Length: 385
Image: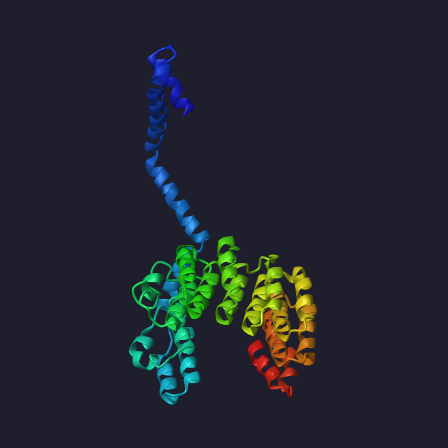
């Protein structure tokens, strides 16, 4: 701007031109505009390259390519699902849900929901929480559909004019979180508003989980306050999801939010909320290794078995993939000595988290546990593997 100003003054003479400040301003603005026009093609090319680089670094380009790859290379066998469906009694709700989960995992990220569309009558048999899971399964199938996620889930989402099933509405909000996991800028405000407007605890449950996934690891204070408000309503169903969502929001940050979470876990009478908060604390300490030791000690020495259960996951996540002897010894100790079956099962399962970087070591470590008299410990062995 300075370079453009001096020539303008020399042309118009040496007199001070206080009255013509507007003209000088226009001259100042005009000169840079002329400079920008000359290398326009080069600038456009430069901007295009920068935008392309940003889309790669921000993860937008890889997500799009991943989506195209999974769709084009989809080799799932639909007859497996049809055979499973025909071999299960229609009244067996557990197996009904299991087949819905199987379909979601088989087609994860492929956007292929043909099986569900062809068997809508069969799908409609899902009730209550099975309906929640079936709707959320669409989020798994369409994972990475960042631009069309809200449009795809529109028939199930909460709306002002109509009141649908709270289970399908809650499941749809959770599905949006699964679709936009770690890339939730576009959907954050919608999920936040849905959480504030929700009157049903089931819808709050889905909104909390969706919001936690969409804002994964951002440590967003506004979202934290809203999740905390849901937590303090002391609703078992919504509070459990809020506890887990706070963990997702602050995953791997080692945040001091764990102090507030533990304080409320001791105050509440609801076991579900305590479990949600215990898992949330474990998520906050993901990958923190020695920095998590103080919280691990606090959780593992707690009288409440649900908090000790959270302590096992805290060890598993804090030392995930490290093959840490300290973590393995601690988990093995709890696997054989704790009085709570839940804690023992979690301890064995979390061996899988700690050892996943060297999977060939895991069978040898859990071999003796697989012969335990305790079915909960035996359950943990295949989960760890």
